Length: 362
Image 1 (cartoon, helix red, strand yellow):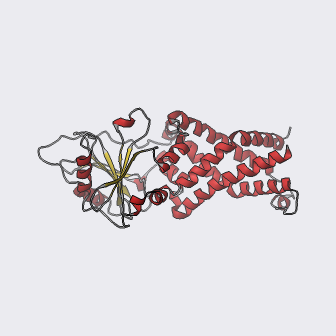
Image 2 (tube, one colour; image 1 turned 60 degrees about the vertical axis):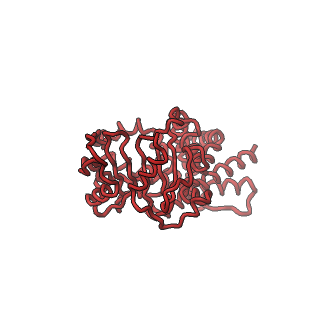
Image 3 (cartoon, helix red, strand yellow; image 1 turned 90 degrees about the vertical axis):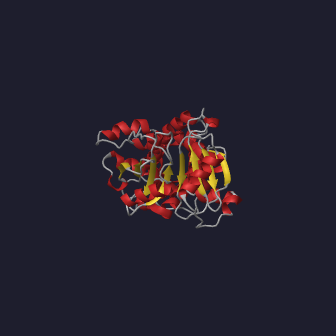
């Protein structure tokens, strides 16, 4: 058999066996490209908060969380959204979901009076459920592994499709032509190939980055050969008499260390000896929402204990920094998010036209 024949058979059986998974991962990925906006659209309480609303202070936000949840003594992670509005907050270790790999308590606060206007555990509200389906097929670590292996198979599906289509010399024009007056089965083939050709580069980027995100334990040792990877420092501090330094002063000190940065997240100590981490968004980083620039501070003295400069990463850390922004489209701004949305629709179009053509030929 020729390489083209082998590629066609592999492509056919991979498509028939993984087509539904291709559709599920593609459509959920399309939705997740805009999930903050979808969250707001689905929840009236979030829409009721005017854009641009901001809290009087970040210390007041933390005080409200401690007041309303006195038994949750671990770390709180407060998101600083650039447009203001509802304040998203995460508590990563709730006792209610201690048996799950990842199910933090998610809260949204009204910045005007610091009331909780929405609460739920990750995976139990619509967008969180879609995220869990896309990432782990609602099956925890096992589902994450299945999705990673399926991603490898989907990359082969795309590559074998290109090999099976690749035209012989002198036939490029015919191979790129859509025959509108041909038989239905031929039109299905032309649609399938043109969608595949238009979407292959984008789909390969999304699929490959998804595979790499699914296997961090296998990826990091390989990247470490390019040079040392960054590891978060193990820091502790000595509690002092009196109240700690207000969070707003710590945020100001962190942004003073990187004047071109804006606060993205504020993470409070997980224990009395813990430190405060301020996550900062800088212009040259690929992700605004999850940037890599960090400043760790002593909550009792305000001293800077460690920093990570996200604009000066090296070796394998550069690839790690780009994986999630490329996979979700954020690295290219709104245009990238739209491309990711289209990639999911293309995956659905490929699965539908491929199955219909196979069924017609049967």
